[in-house]
Length: 205
Image (cartoon, rainbow, N blue to C red; front, side, top):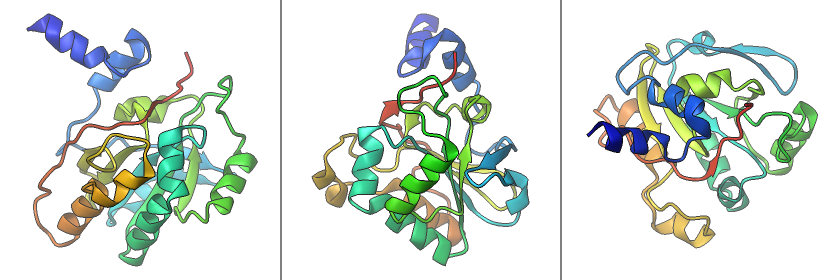
């Protein structure tokens, strides 16, 4: 049993150290780790600043084909705008370490977001990877929803079809849209934990 657990825990992680941190990530129903990060404009953003609101956390990396799938199709931007219209705060987080070929400087990442017509409330830089590791974020995208009281309500994939094919978006169940609708209606989230898919987060080692 232990061996099977360990193998499962390691899968999709970047190294044993990272995997053990991801496995220790907060479970749905527990307090979401508070954090303080600088956004692409240099402003400090704290999760606790948004207490009283629902918050979506989106782990992103423009170099990842799975991220490009959802942005290229306009799917991620549509979700961001829908969320904002309902008073939900959307924070994009990039934990790509500076030594990675996918790393973009804050100004470059900001420019990419503008080019995509993206609409997060802020795009946050997590080059050291501490925030991503505290959540157990292991793919881009990896999605989380935090409730108004700071409780983690959802953790997992953006949708139900783990592919980089744009055509799959229209037939997939969008877990983020579904979970937000349920949470905002005061209903229990029907699928609070799902399997994330995408590129491995390129953490600093």
